[in-house]
Image (cartoon, rainbow, N blue to C red; front, side, top):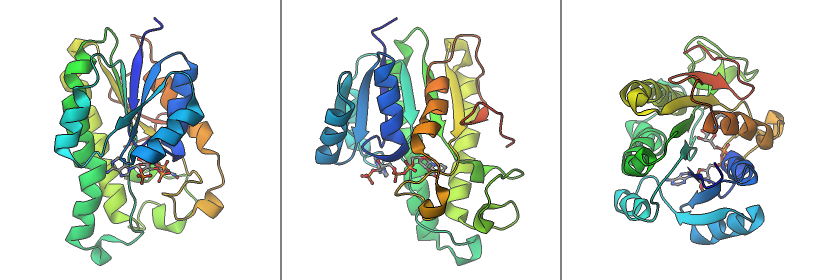
Amino acid sequence: MNDRTALVTGANKGIGKHIARLLAAEGLTVYVGSRDRGLGQRAVEEIGAGARLLVLDVTDLDGIARAATQVDRLDVLVNNAGISPSLAPPADTSVEEFRRTYETNVFGVVAVTNAFLPALRRSPHPRIVNISSGTASLTWSTNPNPQFTPGSGGAAAYRSSKAALNALTVLYAQTLAEDGFKVNALAPGMRATDLNPLAATAGDDPAEAAQGAARLALLPDDGPTGGFFSWDGTPVPW
Ligand code: NDP
């Protein structure tokens, strides 16, 4: 099928832009979600054929509703937009900091997913990929940085927001399974992007992480749903 469409939120830079580029290279029409029109337009021009701009701030409910009216059918939704404002443990994190982080990483995903569900239901093989983080796992970490190892308690707002996103991934997968949806979460690995304060040591190329997202976005009908996977396809423990 070569008339498939995808939406990648926060696709003006970082991992999201690489995901959009890969999906466009697969022949999909890709809506490049960006809250900034200029940055989004630049990404669309960089990606080239198949890319279209969709101005979308995942915290703006009215804007999300307007954006949803511009998309008739959607085959793939990649909830990629995210923020990570602090590396602090919970005891040093204000409620306001938690709220701000959840606003984008959790409530933003619910708002965008629910608004685009009617368009996804028009797809014969709808797929949702939630860009989570290995640091959300309560039991597992291959991350060498001390803030992120299980038991360290660092980056509490971010990690707990992604744990909530993981829970929502399972709940959406359960709810939508009978309608043919595949809903999965991806741990992209430590990547050198603006979000990652340890980018200098993160090292790894965000393009590599995008391959894992593209695989989940293009899953066959007998593929998994309600799972949490590393970028290389390995299951990650919750
Ligand atoms: P970047 O900071 O490079 O990209 C984040 C993107 O999200 C940007 O396009 C940003 O837009 C967008 N964004 C933030 N808030 C909003 C909003 N309210 N509405 C719309 N877009 C928004 O970071 P990454 O590419 O690293 O992050 C992408 C995803 O990968 C995130 O969900 C992150 O949690 C996850 N991740 C990243 C890891 C890493 O090591 N880099 C590790 C694990 C997970 P703008 O340019 O306008 O700020």
